[in-house]
Length: 316
Length: 296
Image (cartoon, rainbow over all chains, first blue to last red):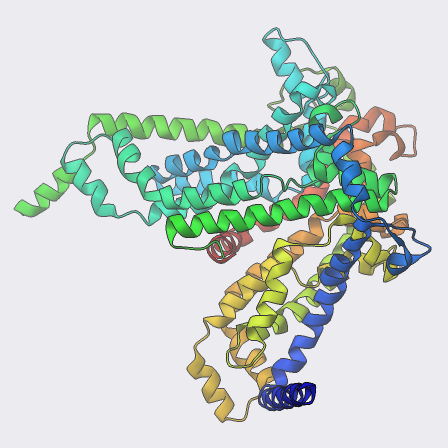
């Protein structure tokens, strides 16, 4: 019995090896070209995935990843019992949701307005100017934000002229989300409108002509032709955002937050950074990060499934 | 004649439309002013007399006086010049190496027929959806011993999967008959990539080069994590010191007077190259954005 099985396995392996040999001979060039790519992905993507196993260990740098002691789900349990657990989840979700509510519709609106411009030169100018902030580095954007929101900064100057009290805005937990979202809209509204502009240009011109002959006004045309026309694109982009709801980057947060605003500004990714790379709780931070990555992974898969159902087009 | 008149009537704007277009143009013009004003403010402030600027409250419509002292300090600051040098090194060497790695990888993924196509695609695309995370990546880079060297800024980003996928899609669309005729002339995969696929994918290559270059230009987080030697700091990290920790960025006593305007002058100096290149490359970026949105 076992003899026959191993024989079968042997034959199978030989057959496979012959197939690979033949494939290699025919596509030698591809095999060689694939090597650097495979090495790169193994070193910088798959090795860190193996490294994520320290989330289940008590990682001690001296002992290495393999040599450190297993502790099972201890760090995950600690995270669920962390005093900041609720705050981190809430901050992450609330910031994402507020961003979807306020920052997501802005480029759609802008695209609709740009599309209605008749003079070519004006259209190009508007596009060039609104895309511009996208090309400014995050450092400069955050530098400007921190400067404008000082007590004697530009925004306080303007608000004070209307009788508001001056505050150092980046020290106010209640203002952090507003600052984060508004500066984000400033930087990306033009750039994000490109996708929607392209979608609008795909709407059938004849629909507008027919509506015009019937005496339908411009606003109604937008409502009944443009918006339904770009709805599939809007839904896909929205799903993409919802899929990334727990996937907030840390770079902008780290540049703008401080211990005074942790209560609203600290999100999962910035907590991972602080715990791991500032307080050297390697394993704990990895566990928090892994928890977050897993949620993100399933949300993206889910978003794609829903999108496939809705549109017959997958996100990838 | 008759039909032309009709056409004209159909294309004529009604009063309602004229109002609509006027309001639309007004809204957009206001929006542009609002979005662009921060740039103007920075430029005006950077040239302003520092004492008058310190006492000024509210927006600026022109520089307050004229004082290029802030710029003199910026260019006298050895850190900024060093930062520029490091950023340019990362940008040039890094982008070149990234293209050297990404092009063959995209070529491999774009070919058909060989037995590993599906496996390799999955191997690559999986990393877009799941990664080891910040801490394990940090540990891996220190374990490789490239932290505190320039390579920490270059090697971990040799292939950015998003760019790889865009390039793969472009390579896939190169007509197969061209490849076949090259093969009949005895070309192997390296020849096909160099002489057929790459020349026919120039627009997409331009997009990818730009994406990589901008990535290097903006990089600061990995520099903050991996570089302790100040002489390796890229421009953005120097900028961070000036913008966020201004107290320890300057050495001379006059710095105090200029602290605020130096900030703005640094922003101008660090942003000007981008703004100078921007009008020429904008269309490539927009195109890349579209490709990415559809296929990314």
